[in-house]
Structure formats: structure tokens, C-alpha cells
Image (tube, rainbow over all chains, first blue to last red; front, top):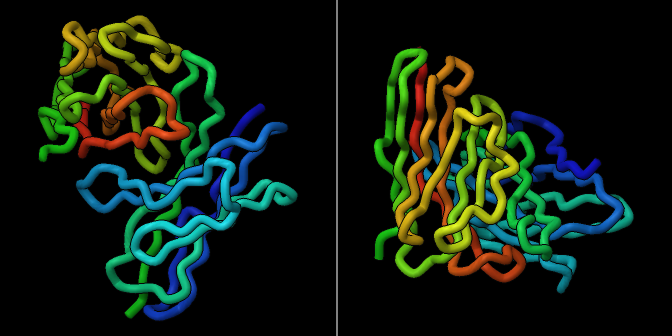
Length: 116
Length: 116
């Protein structure tokens, strides 16, 4: 069955430290992969996406993610955490391309806390 | 330059009542999506519209849920005989066209539905 898993529902890092949020997918066919951020009382905002071009994808706010087919992973990283990065992060996958299958499947989310 | 808007932002109702949730997509976006986000979970797909027609309603949990988009713009999600388990944040998203490989989904802030 096709699925997406985010390891760690809560992650805490110190300000200035590396941020690493994990995402793995389960599928025989590599999907398209997305990371979204959700701030309190706001809509989901796209951070970055992988659509089978470069495996290292750079997004907004200094985030990047690397698609690793051998590990079926798409982990999100940022070299130096900032207080404003505190939010909920969702990994999502898209297996579409056929009409009628236009939807994102989301992981359960990781809440990122930044320690001053 | 408005984004996706949803009304109301909060809705409290009693078990068994009927509710309508409204979504105003970005002007000119032909694709519209509804998702449901339960507490501690990622968004789950409900239905996808391309223009006026529901191209994929496979995520609607049962026949108490129904959505329309009569003029290809505003959409209404309708829930009959609400149950406490329907309590969640209902998210709407729109994209310029269908096909998420090249078209970004823009999310609204959601409607928080509480069924007492």
C-alpha cells in the first residue's frame, strides 16, 4: 500500500542548531514529494517540492530536502534553526498523473519547537 | 490579491444538525480541493473539483458529506446529521489547474468545526 510516514511527532532543537525532519514513503513507484509548513491559525504553505528533477531541492526560508530513492526518503533540513521556524511541518506525496487521482496524501506531521 | 478564504472560521453545532462550510478559491483557479484535518493528524483528502464537476470524491467518508461547486468558483461542503466524530478543521485548497506536478495547491486557513 502507498503511504507516507513522518518519524517523530515532536522535534525540539536549539536556536542555531541543525533542523532535521524525517519523511519516508512506501511505494514501488517514486512519487512526487512535498513539504508544507503550518503556522498556528494559518493555512498550509508550500516549503518545497520534488518532481523528479534535481534530487536536492531548495525551498523557502533556508530549508532544503534531498530525495533518496534507495532509502525511500525525503528528509527536510535547515542548517541553523531560527525562532520563527517553530511550526508544524507536513510531508506529502502525490502519485497522480492520471485524471481523477489529483490529491496529496499527507503524513501525520512533526511539530518543531525551537529552544532559545 | 486575496488567497483562498473560508467561512466561517469557527463553527460550533450540536449533534444531528446540518452545516455548510464555504470556500472561496483564488480567482481563476479551476481546481479546488477539500481536506479534513483531525486533531494530531495530517490533512486527509475529501474531494477534488475540476471546474464545476467533482472529478474525485473518493475521500468523502459517507453519504452525510456532500460538496458542490455550481459555477466553478465558490464551493460549499455540506454535512448532514453531524456527529461528534466530524469535529475537525476542514481545509480548502485551489490550484490554477489540476495536475499537482506543476500546479501548486494554495490552502485556506480552514474552518474549525466542533460538534457538541
